[in-house]
Image 1 (cartoon, one colour):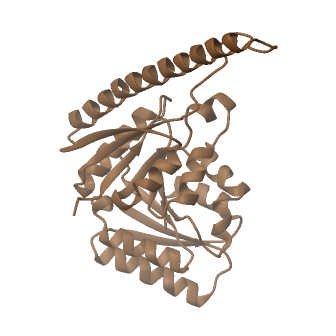
Image 2: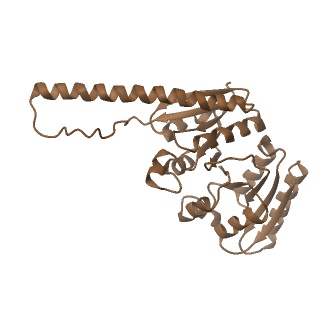
Image 3: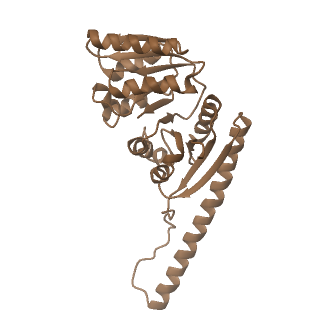
Length: 286
């Protein structure tokens, strides 16, 4: 069976280098191959400025159709050639950063569909929080990033436009099944080796929640990941943002789906508030 890989999703935005550097770090941590994925939208055509409206004869219509097909073919070929050069540069960067095996894949279609096709081969997907389309529209969080997290049943690591190797993570813990599986992920993954962590629970204090928090932190510490814990009250997003600063964490870990107030951190208005206010990598677990 082929080894599952780190899929680094890249486009021609300024986030590509950060994604490549993050993928290189993850590869060194977990000793897994990297595959750079660049998806080319099938609808490459952009307005040429020519006016093709109006009534035309059959021969003229056929000529115009052939011209348009030829133009589309040229654009597709150009996009493929540029994509290969772009991927080769990122692959070389990863190898220079100590990655043992780095490959590339150029696909046609939407990124989300490509990721779904590769899901069984994927160990973790790394995606820039914004891309070419979101930069053009001034969106803080790209639609592609959000759609990928919704669709994939794999961990997604979202990065900003600059990446530095994290030394400490903040884990948004709420005692739910997702949080407990997240703790198991930390226990089993080499991604967190050499790091320290803080489990942060937000909400009304209760004995059962505090006990779960303490037990989870103790389990992680005993496994070799020194972990503190903290319980705070107040708005979830605000407390998480403050927690990153207070505990000097440079990576956020959280579940993508929960049935607690943390659920609002994803797929709701608070998701963008959280990611807009932070520039640290965010590991979203399923």
